[in-house]
Image 1 (cartoon, helix red, strand yellow):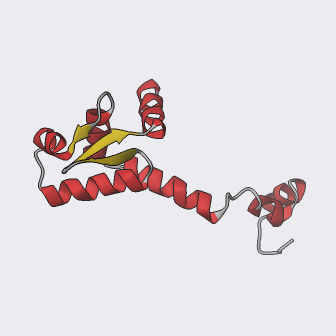
Image 2 (cartoon, helix red, strand yellow):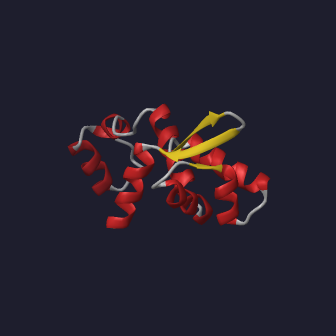
Length: 115
C-alpha cells in the first residue's frame, strides 16, 4: 500500500481486497448517467409538480401549462428533463401532445411519499 495513506485506511483497504476491489463497487458509467438524469428530473419543484399533475391522467401540454403558469419555453425545458429521466412519456394525438407518467415515475413518487 501507499505510505501516504493513514495506517488504518491501509488496513481497511487491504481487508476488503484493496483499491481495485473498491473500484469494482462503482457502477458502470452508463448506469451512473441514468441515475444522474433521474435525480436531475426529480431535483426541481416544478418538475415534481408536473409529475403529480400527470400522475392520475394523461394530459395535454395546455392543461399542464394552465396549472403551472410558467412560460411555454420553461415548461418545455422541464418536460424535456422529465422525459430524458424516463419519468414521463409523450404521445401525439392529432395536433395534440399528451404527457403521462411512466411506471418508473409513478414508483419514484410513491417512494418519496413513503419517506
